[in-house]
Length: 180
Image 1 (cartoon, rainbow, N blue to C red):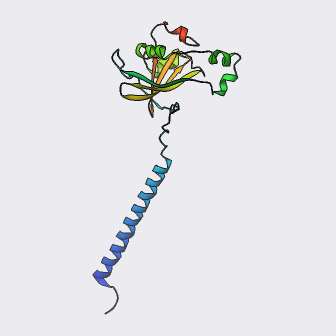
Image 2 (tube, one colour; image 1 turned 180 degrees about the vertical axis):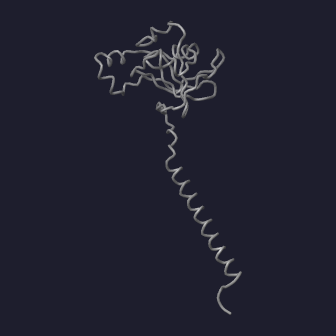
Image 3 (cartoon, helix red, strand yellow; image 1 turned 180 degrees about the horizontal axis):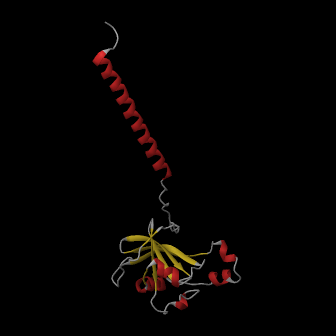
């Protein structure tokens, strides 16, 4: 007798169906993984110039612990005058281009300012388009640094931003606007 009949035929059909099902699941898994890795953002480039701070989307109410013995080393700190919005408000370009911030003052601010919950930051600070940007090592961790003319500091990692502001007004003279 030729052909596949009976129990042997049922086993063959079952193995074909099983093979087809596993192949389809594997194919779907490969497609999903391909889409995931293709859509995953690239790491920011490492270069000698100031790195752009990522668009951080996590905000923590507790921040980095910085005390008098924490090493703070600046990789670079420079005034960002590339923002086109500086040209719009009358006098903002002149005000921003003459703003000065020394590394010593920046270090004092980092050591003195306190962590800000994001809600407090929104309520008490008005961001300025005038920003000092750079990279700073606090301890052994490198952060993107923004010192905003609005009176606050942001230390950021890939997806996390830490906001710092002062309790009083002793540093107001170093900023373009005062916090509330």
